[in-house]
Length: 102
Image (cartoon, rainbow, N blue to C red):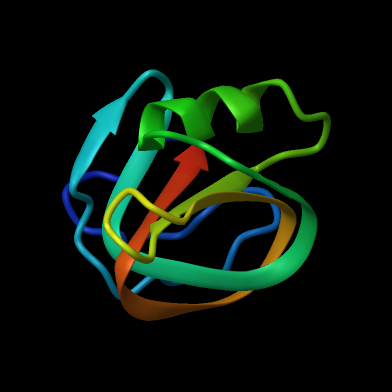
């Protein structure tokens, strides 16, 4: 899934048609958006120590198309949520959205 420099392009799969955020980077098969969270059909929530750890959780969870890593209290209460469907996105400074590209 290559969205180019702006995420205003169309998504494939079960993601919103537009994401009003700039693509921060691409890593390990994910498009990464800093400061973006989402609402949708959550599969599960797990502890993770980094966005990379959250990517691994998503990769190892059947049906995961996107995940968010939230560092609410700067390393003391981090959570990785994985989703099978996305209904909307929102700006949340502590959140990192990762969209699977494979």
